[in-house]
Length: 154
Image 1 (cartoon, rainbow, N blue to C red):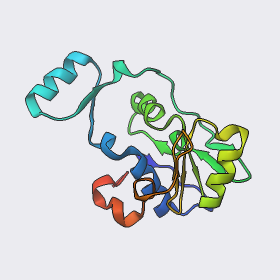
Image 2 (image 1 turned 135 degrees about the horizontal axis):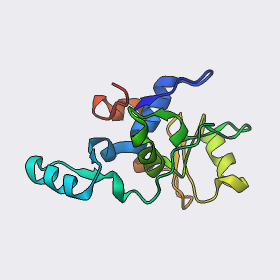
Image 3 (image 1 turned 90 degrees about the vertical axis):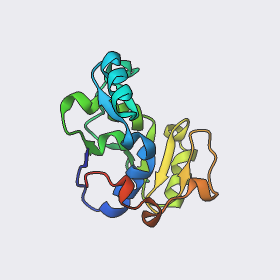
């Protein structure tokens, strides 16, 4: 997957935010079928996810903007898959996640009607879970914490 370029958005921070969200799922191999997944897992011992198990075959929306003020972007619409058949995987990973610029924007969006039941990640490091929990070291990320292991499009 590669991150789609956006004007007026800190791309390094956006890459870090999306990498933080994907975490261990970036280490997962994708296969078309469950039988192929089992064979791959037995052969390599890798984490494997069959695309046929995705709960939805829906591709991510094209327009990333959820709200203009504060700017809130659909995380699933910010990435371009290597092939079109992988697009539903983006919806699965990032479907109910939005990216905002600042901690303050994250809390403003959370209080809006569109902020209920979504995970919100601010480019300055704040993470608000879908249940509204925020703060603490497990819910804050930095580019330094991510490192090359979680690099998207690297």
